[in-house]
Length: 320
Image 1: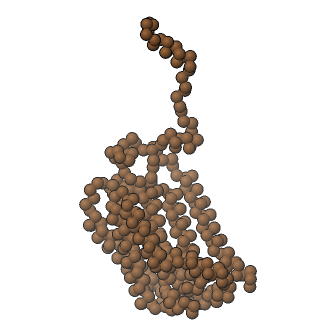
Image 2 (image 1 turned 180 degrees about the vertical axis):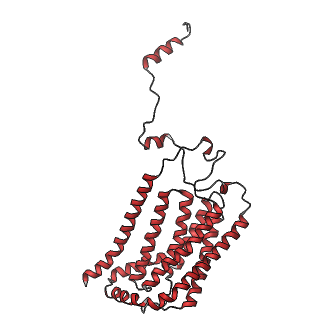
């Protein structure tokens, strides 16, 4: 019994370590397979004609953007369609999960409760807050403010996208809960289908990671790191909710899937409005060449005898 308890505890670091190792391996492969980025032309430096911020297409970097009202309407339409699609998908698979999920949920729930370690559960009570409503909404608000400042063009897009995500997730989830009304486990009867914590982690942190990657990297390696980070957060939140018996197991898995379904339309909307992603490249400099292992050429020091001869030739009264 004691060994089972600690194996259940060890599942958390083991899962995070496995996700981290897979992310590092995939990022290294992507870096090795990526072609060398050419040096930027002279006119592509910041402040020079032809400069385009990293992660932006040329179309989205045009000054004087006057198309924002139509783009905002497009964002609203895609967000609403994504919310309806998320509700429809979860509504269709919900009855099967509710009617047949108990065969999986109840044995796992009993086994988890029988093997809980109370000090570890107290730690997870704090770590579990990463997926709470106000935590994720606060993270979305902070990211909206920061990205709204750093976004070179269409500064309205990050705040509008994250605000739309809050509305879509809140009302689509409320509609699902009023429609299906699944009761959670005995220790947490308010835990409903789909689990809100995993859903919010995937949706909001995934959206933040996507916009950060798009704006400041755009590389395949950066994309892998973003996906790996969100995957680790999703696993962490799912583990916390399961260990603390906040939801049924099938509800937790459904929450992760539901968050991905809601996230996809927002990524599509950003792509349609801001254009394709362009990998960030920087002009090759002396520091870059030195860091890459290449020697930096420097002018040789002048010979002292040559300097004295030249000075003597320049004295007044001498032929020169």
